Length: 78
Length: 254
Image (tube, rainbow over all chains, first blue to last red; front, side, top):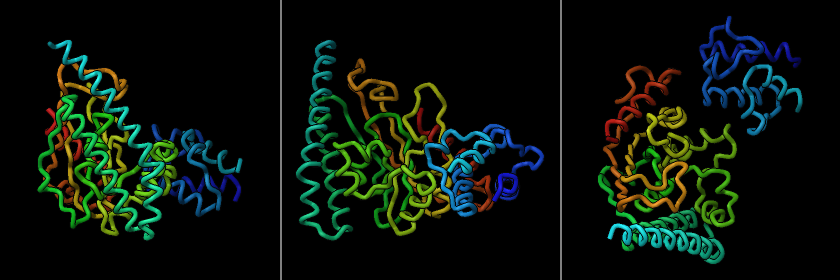
């Protein structure tokens, strides 16, 4: 799965499950401050990304994740 | 007289910490390993380990009282139903809240910081007692819910860390989410300490001007739907429950 496709999947999760406004979802939007994703959603997202890609972002890396770009970087660096 | 009392409480506090470390070490080196010999069944070992921890913590609280370092009082024990699975939620004003609470609620589950899991003084006891580690954030919520569903009671501090004096109480939504997903009653436990002692950023040797009093008040259990008007499946339910819990605790903490 390339990163464009992955971005769309993440956007899908944010919009459908976390009720985030689709227009607000950009690569550099801050998940926590702008998109109002809380820690529980973030963990949910982590679990779903693991199911989707088979890659597991470590808790240490995820702690520093702020934007969707960070998520994509973390996944592609694995 | 006051200076003498203060000096004594400093000595008493030091002794208490010394014994805490010493007994912790003895238990880790000799007693917990012995449990593996005498209690082969992990479930039996867990019960024995938790009882041992409760006794040791009880001794600490008793010792502090006997040495007049602090006083300690628990009310509302009748609200705790050990036959039922309850999610015990407590505020977290001091370093020794878990000591106080486990001394009176012996068999409950709790979440242990990864650092404690690796601390040589505490590792043996917390692993034998089979407490939940917070190492994997993605597993933590599920582990908490699973324990509650299998009939255990779980103690959580929804603040996630000790309270900051002078700041409004703030709960992380994780505890509310656990309550909603597990569908168990919440047992609110209000912990208070006056004057301030062993709070966040307070070194252990900062002795308050007069003898501190720890008060633990166990409130009657509440069901999630008593605090949340809408459907508990709603994403906003955890915020609603969280706000209701914060108000409940704030009205008790004056």
